[in-house]
Length: 258
Ligand SMILES: Nc1nc2c(c(=O)[nH]1)N[C@H]1C(S)=C(S)[C@@H](COP(=O)(O)O)O[C@H]1N2
Ligand SMILES: [Mo]
Image (cartoon, rainbow, N blue to C red; front, top):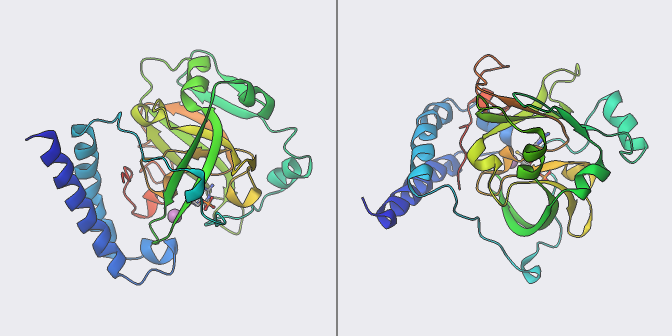
């Protein structure tokens, strides 16, 4: 199959998958997760879209825009402020005490303050965020390239996935923290950054302060906000629901390519 046909097939496939999702009345991610067929459909779609993305080459860049394309405001979705004493304490001191822990299958586990992260190579990009609920927004993100952080900690040969542990509990009893994961292909991609700024201002709490992932070729729920810890693993099979992310454990596809 030629590259062009593969890309067309993939686009058609994804349009079909999302078109069907769009036909359900979606009040939010909760509603969607309860829809049985979505689990069924996108469970299979997962394997297919991941394979298709690899066929067309994972180096492809997400589209970038210009300042004139920026959305007037970048809305907040999901958690707007993590409800935990630990997070509140960090926020109160403007994240001066924040340390991003990076560990797991790495040679040199490390902790990074915001100042440390700002010293590493950064990238600025204007991209479109697509939420599975059916809205999009264009924002300007600046952040540390994830590849720079990984370069510092040196993943071992066994490392296959990067897990992002977030600050926000998804249950009112304070448990079930949001989490996400990507493979090394996306982790080392040029546009994959740990963003600390949005639209030329420090990242607001509503959008994931102090650090949120941007993984531009995937849907919104992959872009973990309030990232506290990054863990290199060889599998997420034994962790939480075993599907590599909070929404994935409710049935969303793990590879949410767009
Ligand atoms: N920690 C955390 N990350 C998260 C979420 C969340 O609830 N908690 N929601 C996800 C979803 S569904 C979307 S669309 C985006 C929303 O990002 P925004 O608040 O900057 O619009 O964050 C994603 N990352
Ligand atoms: Mo979303």
